[in-house]
Every structure is written in C-alpha cells, then in structure tokens.
Length: 359
Image 1: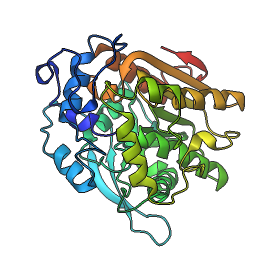
Image 2 (image 1 turned 45 degrees about the horizontal axis):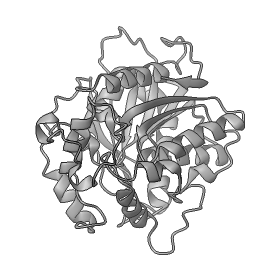
Image 3 (image 1 turned 60 degrees about the vertical axis):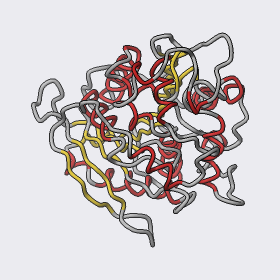
Image 4 (image 1 turned 180 degrees about the vertical axis):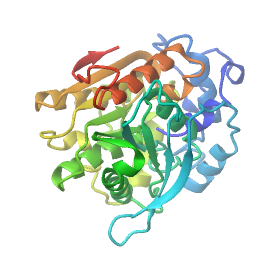
C-alpha cells in the first residue's frame, strides 16, 4: 500500500536474512505461499518499512523514515519530464503533476499516443511524485504513453474525499489537453497502484456520473477498494508478506478520520454501482491482504457487463511491480501493462480486447 516503490532500490536479498522472518511485518505462518525468489525482497522491504500503527503512529514520522531510505535503482530512461500545476477542485489549491513523455523516437510507438493519468500509492499518506518516479518512468517506457503522475493531497492533513477530487481534477485537465499532450483522443487511461488504484477507480465513477472525460481503460494495480477490511485475504495474508493488515487499518484511519464514511462509494469503490464504467485491467498479488477485493471488483464489473481482465500473481506480494528490475514476474507484469495501455490507441500494438483473465 505504501513505500514499495521508494524502498525497492535499497531493498534486496542482502538486506533480509532469507529465513522467512519479515522484520516489522510480523512472523510468517508455516506453509509459505510466496514465490521463493520474491521472499528475500519482501523481507527486505518489511525491514525498511515503518511500523505503522505500532511504534509509528505519526504520518510525518513515517514519511521521514521512508525518505531516509536511499533509492539506488536506476530509473528507466524516458523523454522529456516536466513538473507543472493544473487546476484543482473548486475552492482547492492547484494540483501538482509530473508529465512524462516517452522516448521521442517515433519507433516503436508512433503517435498519437495513449495518455495515462497515474495515481501513486502510499496509503493516501506516504507516497509522492519523487517516491514513485521510478514506477512512473517504467510505466511510461513500457506503454509508450504520455504519463501524468498526480501529486494529490495526502491524509491526515487532507482527508477523504480531497485526494479523490484532486485525482479527478487531474483527469479532467488531461482530458481537456490531449492535443497538447500528443494524446489519442480515444485513448485516455486512468491508472493507480494500491491507494492510487482506489483513486483511479473513484475517478472513473466521477467521470461517469459528471459527464466525462471519456476514459478508455482503468488500470488498477493491487487496488484498495473496500474500507470494511473483511475478506479472506485480509486474514490469510495479515502478516508475513510486507504489507500487513495492521498497516492497512492505520492507513484507513488516517484517510477517513474519526467518523469518516467508509461505505461511501468514492471511498470504497467495491460498493459502487459498476454499470457504465470503462473497461478494466486489474492486477492482484496472491500474498496480499488486498487480493480478494481486487478480484471481487473484477467480477462485479463483469457481472455488470463491463469488460475486465484479471492479471493474477499467486506467488507475489503487494508492491511487487516496483521490483521489475530484479523479479522476472514483475517484468512480465509490467510488459503486459504496457501492452494493454498501448492497445487503447487507434492502431495499437495489440488488439485492444480487455476481457477474461490473464496470467
């Protein structure tokens, strides 16, 4: 839910002992379901991550701990990168965004290109543009899309629904500036990982209900979609796989605040009416407390007649995509994400069909 991207460069087999212990993430029950190749990285990330809801209860302290982790991974090379501000929601400040343009060489991705509005993870509390720079670059490079990374307001300073409205404001700006961005008018994509997947899904609900912009695809990477936190995967994956159920409780507390309505569909998109939403591509990890709600959302969309593909990784953990540089399965997942995003543009590399299961 937070910090995997920031810590991925420093985490690795050398930082964990490989014994199955997970540092602050808690002990691991017998019968480890995690891919043995991924285990050292999950352990290393857990050892670097703040003990949220335990020894660490202050958001600023948690941010300082993550900021102290050196990011040593070499980021993917893209074209131009520019920081700018776009209009925020009514009465709110402008929203900072970072726009990534792919390699300017027209091959292998001749324009016009898809435009991806990307919402970073971090439990609505921890992530930022710098911490997710590597993931944004990797997704831009894999898809050949122009990527707009959104620096939405964070909790607890700005609680629900501030982040949702910032994400939607950025989506509206991108939709209105596709010509400037070099984008295909029919290939606007909203994407996000973890808490960012929540914001991406909520942005699609607002786009449907408020008359646009037209979204071609929603890409939800191990999304957090239900404040109830009451699924089988919350129990079976509560500890031992980097992100814990205790972390998630703390994140939701920061986001909603006292008396916050976790059943509001913009907070818990799993509870929303899915009819009329754009097609979806949902990535889930088997050793993740959030696995079941991602799968449930995929099936709810299908049941409502919305095309959706599920890319399931039974032996992976939450945040694994940030380790595409060292985990083969993460590289494969990233490549598929790139293909499905590219498929939204006219004459894309792939057919553009989004349905059934993948992986």
